[in-house]
Image 1: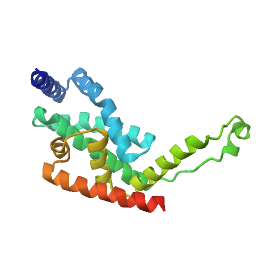
Image 2: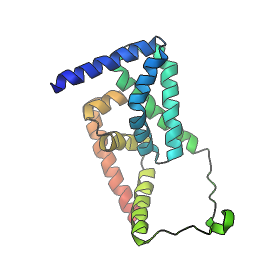
Image 3: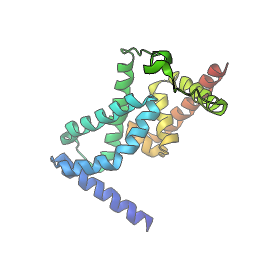
Image 4: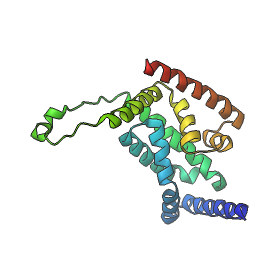
Amino acid sequence: MVSIAIASTVAGESSLAERARRGDRLAFEALVDGRLSSTFRIAMAILGNEADARDATQEAFLRAWRDLPGLRDPDRFDGWFGRIVVNACRSAVRGRRRRTVREIAVGALPGGGEGFDPPGPAQDTRTADADVLDRALDRLSVAERTLLALHHFEELSLDAIGLQLGIPAKTVKSRLFSARRALERALEVERR
């Protein structure tokens, strides 16, 4: 019964992709609606920054709409779109290197920061742990973060990741192992 539901879902997406490829905006909107939250989650996991993740998500959908007429096999839309998402994230990382961020001190806020409640001890610990993880992830390459995000956050199978990245599942498995080891080393460095 489950395989019948999956087959009909895949057939429905293939039909939507074919219609969208021919210029049907409503079909494309249906494809976007079905992928928006997962695309943002992947971008957020890879980029670690909400603004960059939103930009990469938007860029991915824009590229997909623009390049959709060139999609040869609508049955492979999912993998094709996954590659677009990863490439949009890679572009965001390259663009990030050219930008600088200016921090604003709390005292510079209107009212001198009055009403700003500093976090409590439990919040400090969670924030510190998240900060260590963020810094460790920043030490990884985009390819390593991508693999970790697709497998652990999106819970995609090795085959599905391979389809999205255009590499064999065995290569995904090997690279995922290396990415995990790189993250462990980065966490050790950051905890020192």
